Image (cartoon, rainbow, N blue to C red; front, side, top):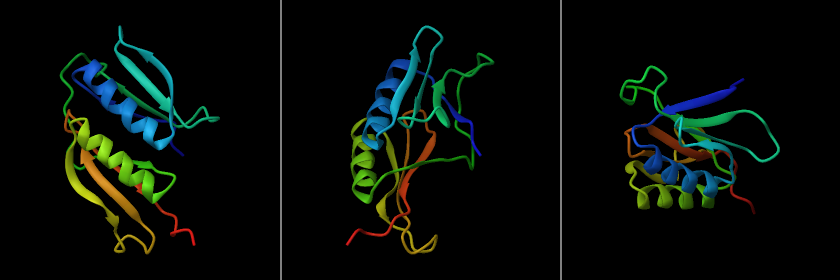
Length: 132
């Protein structure tokens, strides 16, 4: 359903370091990085789409986070949610909700919420039950 998601950033070097760490923890691979443009994109190994992109806004104006917008990234496990959240916070993210179950969404929804250094809201979540 989704081809790509693009997040506006103000400082490419800072944003790239932040997102490279988060994407690495989730198992996503870098598809390209063009600091001179500046933009970069990540993907799931073995899949061309969807892409997660960061870059300066096309119109040349300052990037600003949208009110009510959030991108949720799928984690392969609850442990990956925990690790990704910890990396995000260690790399300058602001917490919007520590990792944990959110049963008001559904019984197995495990997620964490944070804002990147530019203020964009992200979620990392796992929908799988605990493996027994």
